[in-house]
Image 1 (cartoon, rainbow over the protein chains, first blue to last red):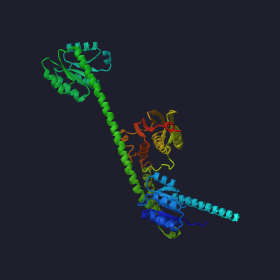
Image 2 (cartoon, rainbow over the protein chains, first blue to last red):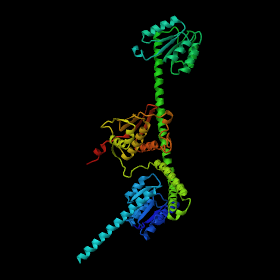
Image 3 (cartoon, one colour):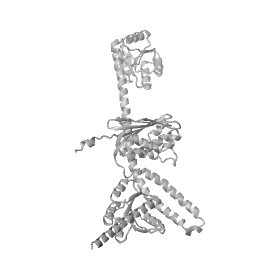
Image 4 (cartoon, rainbow over the protein chains, first blue to last red):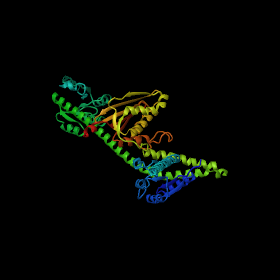
Length: 146
Length: 388
């Protein structure tokens, strides 16, 4: 089966981490986009149809949770996986309540990342599929009325 | 009335004049005091070495070691004994000298027996008082030390959390870099590279070390907390059963006996079940490790005021006294690094403190170790208080 690359956006102020992580994901055949701050991430989301955002919770300026809130308002279907280097799982849980798909502790196992990313993407695809079907039903009903 | 002192007051009377000594001893015996007798300073000290005494009545003027010197020696070696001096009529200065050297009081000969009895009783009361003071002092010192320990552990906890976080970020970079290199080296284009295997081995060693470091940082952060965790009523017995289920194989292999002394009603606490289970898992697996074959673990609960006390006692190797004060410190371990990080009990202490509980340990080497957990008990009072 040919793999359809996921469009992944990595958001973290740790440039070294973002660089290496994106190389690794690209090596796995994903299409990777990079942002070093919450604001940059929102700009990219405006222009590119991203599937999954991998978002660091602790960032200077606009932090991960604020960024997550904005993403969920502006692009509710995009799935977000939170990254934390901290024991503040409470923050991660808060993030999930705000609509994040899941969270990971740094340094994360690549297998875990892959599984969570695939599941996140699957959920997004399914949601888009349901929306498409609803639209189709809506159109059919309308045409039936005429 | 004197009967009260019969068995408790241990009295020694020291005088070289045998007739005088015997008479006094007889009279004291009539009043319910049965003194041991010594004829001089040396004999007195010999007796004290063998038999503990509360009060010594001591003649000042004696051949051999003088009364005052005997007094000094007594006070040097047996600090708690109270000494009453008997001085000659004219030698008041001896009495004063004696008090300076630590005597309880002095009486001048000839002594009035009731006067002497009263003095002895007063001296005895003094020993009791001193003993109580000493006990209170020890208790306070222990309490203070415990408070300092808790504060120290809390500040270590805060610091270690910070360090763990700061280490996790660079660790994540190393992790992704190594992972990427591995990906590249494993690709088909690299199949002709002669040192590919050696390179892969190196990368794998990096990855293994990352995992080891991560185990420590994640443990320091107490990461096992489940996202869905929240406070609820927790049945300790049920949770203990569940935890034992996870240790079933080891318990069976070692043929460990589990004694359940859990009070049916008094084992419900108000807490976070996931964190409590993490604590129980730590304590029970420690207990199992400490036991040899056919050892036993005793579990009991009781209620003290607003708390439930859970005791986990094992008949294992025990913990040496010098280690007892350190077992909650991070990285304190007697195992090698692949067996334990020395963080288990540190995290246990952190969790229990965060849950408004207390944890204590006592142990006798070669006999047993007992962990005491104290947690707020569950009361459904809050339900009744809310208006309906």
